[in-house]
Image (cartoon, chains in turn brown, orange):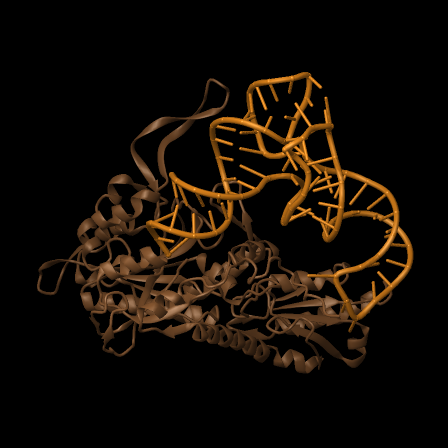
Length: 506
RNA sequence: CGGGGCGUGGCGCAGCCUGGUAGCGCGCCUGCUUUGGGAGCAGGAAGCCGGAGGUUCAAAUCCUCUCGCCCCGACCA
């Protein structure tokens, strides 16, 4: 008699993907919703993950000469007004501070008082306020390039929020640079895109496509926006990081000028680039399964959990000694630029204990009982394999092989995700196939279908817009590093010289 | 903001149509028994049913308003 495989998360991805996502976030103990509309509480397991991600990124930024700084949370209204497209892009989702005091109201409650002469907006992004500083810091070509990053929270009053993927407040970094030439700024834009791709692929084990955004998808005020796009397990695309070449638009708006070597005054060329806690959402949807999240070792808050097993109190000291000394040895092992993170969970909660760690996605679970100790061995399971698949290994060998084992897991996660993307990416050249690809065929409400369609596009906003209206599918990016190819636009049939990637998106 | 759905102990839900002040599973606490695996038995804590009004002798159940959440759409990292 076969019974349905029991999963730790219900519903499964297949049954109801959006609900699965919510449940996984909860079950993995990463974060929870807060009483504040659209905002989340990031719990220690999730925050440590974010710390690991942000530390890796920070190191990479610094390796390219970027320095960190910090700018105000509040931006005067008139700053935002300086760049026309920028205003238009963000005006609809700004939190605005209008008062600076609270007074007792007639009903005893507090009411805002002390109207500000000029409202302040809570930063949705900081181009304008940082531009203001840049304009003061830069006067000569000798001051360039200026390479600044800030780690901050920002607020975008979104209509619809999803934990980690789109929250009203989120944590991110925003890099802002100023250069003496367009070429240098463009190179910086692409360099930072490479940094994001490196982080995504080598730390998050999340394969990404690097590409340029179509004009319709560009950052408000940018000349060019570049993106890394990942495919989630519902086959939708997730924009996981963006890098913008801002030309002289913001320099003009913020009066960022410098004197060049010919004593001529010029506007600087600027860039900005950002990535956020959304990466965690991407991580969940790239590797998570029906038992919870699966953490790539490079960013996992901890790598190994040791689960002591003893039949009675008499055995406990011996087991705990073994466990604690093993933990010490493991923590001495290096992995991914830090030491191995080891948790010891000696709660006496039976088998449920192991499932907590499965849901939390820890890469390796190790069970240690008297039987292992007598053999001087450990009994372990990998999160990227079935939960019943466990291996016994001699202790010292386990300790010395652990860095390699973690690398293997990291690699296997990436490879699995890459294969998934490959299987669900199609070159599509006729309109009917294209529409079929993005049209649900089954009767399930949450059917997962489609994927990435690599198709030709004539370059017109009209074609792009029509496909968006009719199918909810957008151009995710125009991939970089791909040779031109002659073809016909999937929308209108006009000649096209390259393929672009179409997909439904988060 | 438009369409749809939903708000009942920490989580998932039943009850609502046919009003009579709350129930199930998991989790949690205590004890005993178990122990290489999401344990068994017994006992227990925890909700006044999102909020506010109204109808009624009586409302989780009916009516109105409101807040929030989820899905689709529009918009976005």
